[in-house]
Image (cartoon, rainbow, N blue to C red; front, top):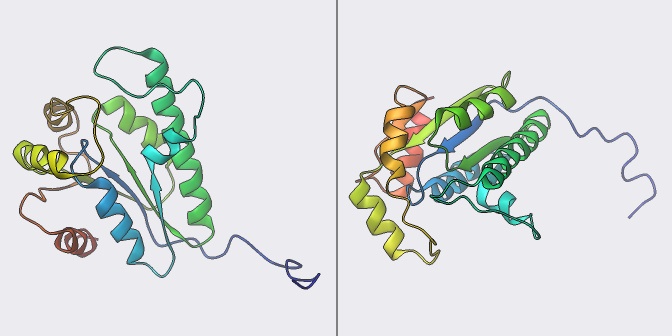
Length: 183
């Protein structure tokens, strides 16, 4: 590599056109939809909340149905880190697509505060509980707990927030096309 390779290089360029936060319960299709959505842009980045959680290799507390204040703190830490990455990618002209399990108003408000001033599109994936149960049973990723009760929390606490998609009868491609068409 020539000595001058990085001289005069600018990382931040024209900001990206959009930023996405794709939320829903486990099994709603967030990761698959977010990865495919990011691929649709000339420069797109998929920021997966679960992968950020995995960066904590010692002392990590995964969310659980039981009260765990440390798990809650780490959930907000991953939201903050996802937001920092999204801001960095956005400033560099890369469309960031964050996916995370967000069902509580306080968690969403935390994200919205950390993503303010970005051209944020909030996408809520809300297939039926039956479809989610089938998807969870069919996938390779095994969940330690049954999270189906989160569907009710999502629908009651976040009603009216963002753009909702019932992807129960939609393919991955149809879901992404619907999101893009709703811009």
